[in-house]
Image (cartoon, rainbow, N blue to C red; front, side, top):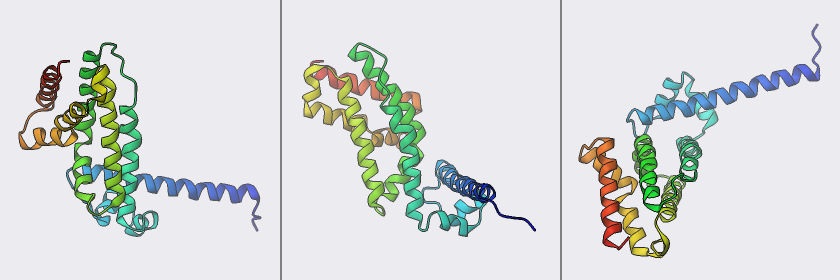
Length: 201
């Protein structure tokens, strides 16, 4: 007859915790994959199939679909918002503007399917709507950090930059105008340069 020991009990608990963690990550990865593939609002059944777990497992970890979308938003935020906060390496403000736009283009292009899904889902989720506002606020601060001196306090200029260089602008140029990522980046560069020149910078 086997005798349970604290060590054995801890090993069992650790094993269960690891399986739980693995299952949860599989579910999040499945949602990321589905959204990246163009499925804006995947069902729990689709997530379970891709994750290769039972539907009960999906609902055990996320007892409603919104919680799964929240987990997706937080996962993306950790990866990409932190990337936006890495200090720029250029020293002259004009070079910083170009570096900012190039960094934005990488983030925008990779995040585009998720952004489209978030826009669709924000009307159903206050949480997602608030995260979108937070990401846009961080991007706005990114703009302010690159323009010179007095331009930082020029509300009209910052609002204009935010509009023409927004994620929505990127999506419009890529999806509606069918521009390539490189063409879209060049368009953003030309628009920002023209705006800054018009404002005397």
